[in-house]
Image 1 (tube, rainbow, N blue to C red):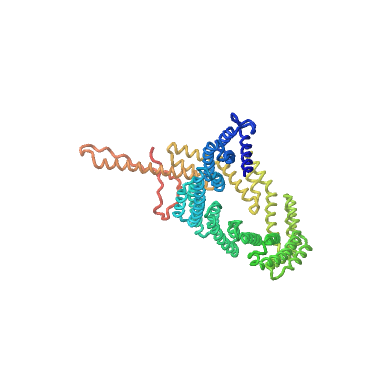
Image 2: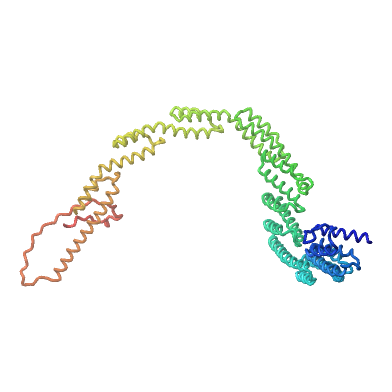
Length: 594
């Protein structure tokens, strides 16, 4: 016992001597007195370092009751024990229960602080057990969304009185708010999924997947996601079975990769892609579809369901290969290669869908063989016509005429002949039209008209020539008839309307200015009629005035003027059609007196 106490004291002194030096503590251990050692231990313990406190306690515990410094040592020991208990409280506040208990147990049994330390150890152990139970019950309540029960557990944690459990209570309140929001997000996702469309399930899964995996709602979240994924898979299978491959792929792609049915979703995507490609038919498409289908996991239900379809594609690939080879031969315009193409197409299985296509192609290639000679004729004729010359068109027409009646290419040949005949006529007549236009540009319009008239009515450029002739005639007639119309307008301005009408009537109905002349004649005739009727009204008014105011009886009447017959007025040419009834025809009137 004495040896142990001595060793303990020596160890404590060795540790204390390693502390930062004070006034006397930097001396060698063997040179310090016990009083100085006690002072150094006290100085070190007051730093609050648990190791220093434990070393100081070990130092004085080695001294017996009969030690001269026992009284002072016990006083300091109580202070150091209280400091050590403070360190234990810090550890419990940090959630380190075992460390706190270890520090509290180091309080010496004879210390005045020992009862308090034992009581704290018991309280901490009890609080720890109650606190953990409250936390567990709170988490269960949150899972059940029993927020009232969870709040009661928070209150229970606060009532434990420790800072550690107060912090846990605060954290629990924060977690409750986050958990409540997580459940609200889950409810929102469920509301969206209730619409029952693929896009709704996809949106619901996306929203629910954003919920923190650490949240207590995650278990229910995963259950919901699995349920919605199963609904998406059912819709995808329905779309795939009805040929809606794009919609099937879109629905299956919305299933999360960590879902329990992700393998089925992947298989369904691969199968739908394969069917989509195969629906376009053709050898290359069938090969592509087969390659896609070959990637499907054979352990999935989708593979088992579509075994027969995959076998069908294999047969279609073989038949499509025969057709593809036949088409390659038929791409070259050769009688022998057409026959090879027919031989390959005939190998298509009658039970395969390509059988109809193969028979159609065989019929076409038979026709190509029968029309081979005529196609050579038409090809040569096209080469002649491509020269775009008179001789080229003549040679093309002559060559195409070799296609006989009742031949498959007879209509095509005759159509080309008609086309080239028109081109030939244009080539022959264009120089004539060009010559006429050159004359017209120099003002020799009548010569231009004579030249252009050489193009006959059954020729390709006849209409073009007639349009030019009409325009040139208009210019010629305009030069001749314009002075006549100007003379008539001059007479009309002088008030000699009848003469103006007579002059303008010289422009015949086949002349360019005829319409303009007739318009002027109508205007002048209307003006002349208006003037005549105005004169008649004035004369009638004078006669009525004389009859109402006769001269006096006494007044001698003037001798009557000799009667002379008034010459008939000169008649203007009639410029409007006669009335249907001859007796209602409009009268012709003379010019009004000036």
